[in-house]
Length: 305
Ligand SMILES: *[C@@H]1O[C@H](CO)[C@@H](O)[C@H](O)[C@H]1NC(C)=O
Image (tube, rainbow, N blue to C red; front, side, top):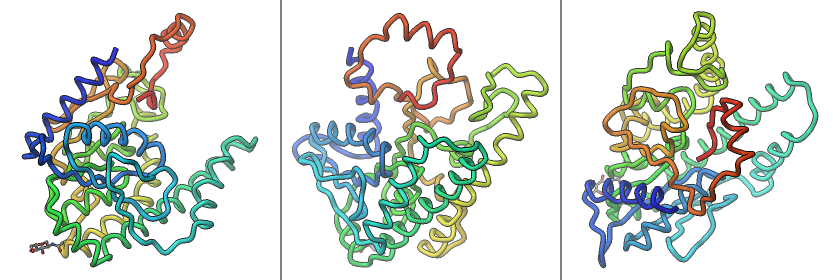
């Protein structure tokens, strides 16, 4: 049952080894810069396994966090931020419950965009506060970490890794707006890569292809809005002109929690590794009813890992 998980962890271990980290008594030092929320819950398991294999993990998080809490298998290092618990709860928690209210589609759409902007602003602010925290940067720099393990949806980890000149490994299920293609200079033909929310498959009619070209435009607006501040922050911190693509392309390896059993074919680059199933520690066989539903619906599974 756990073979897939073990295999994926071996891949991860191999990658960390190839980056010069030695397991064993003295272990390697991993700086973990997670994304808040469920993203962290996926990464936590890997941190636990790394610790079990003799690595030293330091998890860096803002002092206010939903899920990043102390545990015995890593050292939690928190940094000060200027927003209050109330502001944070209202932005992050207050909004998520709205998903259950009955509202007009357009109202949901605009409210979601407004919420995304606010949350993105909050994360960007915490990143600026982290990078401007001279004492913290000095102490992180002095700790000589071997690698930064981070989620590129919060580009702060990548930026920090570059600032401290530490190799970075990304751990993600997916990133919107094709930023993985952008960050790895991967070919990205829209003629057969179905775009998010289009419900297209990899075989498209002419009109479906048109839809495939148009859908990403709205998302691109949201991404530009929420992620472009990291380009200016990076330019300021690294003292040279940086784009978001420059920030994201810093990673040595991209570990995708995906698998082509579930996903449509797409081009990949040599530094993309697929470790789908890594989070399925306690897998059970799907029931017949469930299997039938999945097969019949041709369901495109985006969030299963
Ligand atoms: C980290 O330390 C090295 C060696 O002392 C120094 O050259 C470098 O500028 C420091 N980096 C940062 C970001 O402070």
